[in-house]
Length: 283
Image (cartoon, rainbow, N blue to C red; front, top):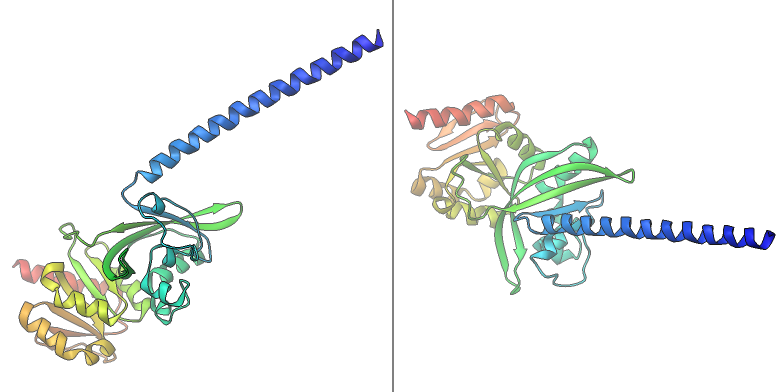
């Protein structure tokens, strides 16, 4: 009798274990199928999505559903996107130009504030598949998330190089001052698309192609304006495009189509200046 009871207990235990394993298998398969469906949704998006941590390391992305990895380099955001500066130094964030990168600045600030960001546009120089450097314009937004008690941001990147900007006029911003860029971007984002160029090559290329890019105006600082005044004057004469220069003077003044603004101008005042130009043109 004791042996019979033991056999029954063993058999019951085996049955319970088998049922538990079967249920676990069913649950695991359901999770796997759900993950496949979610992955299919993410990989089918037109925009690129990157889950990045505080060190800009890419944890997950749909980028490789469209672009084949070139090498086994660092999985840092700039390297994955083939940013020229990241590829030159070997790692995103180590180049001298990275200190003036508006993308890194805004993402870092989002981590510090544990907040989202949107309407960030920038010019990038990326290494193309043929090894040649290609100019692209990108639009980014970020969503802050906490995973396993670790801060992350989902960065969505959209290529807007060919977008004509009919929804909002485009402004080209040229300066190494990333804090000034962020101030201008946030002040004007409701009325304008502020496109940043953080290198002279990017800026001059877009200024010389101002008609193609359909820029509404150019905002820059005294440093860039003084270094490239010949190109700027040529741009103004040929396209009648307005140029606004942030300077150190207490009061702004104008020289033809070039208007000088106080570097400390408040956001609302700056918005009034640019919106006022729109009203003048309409009338």
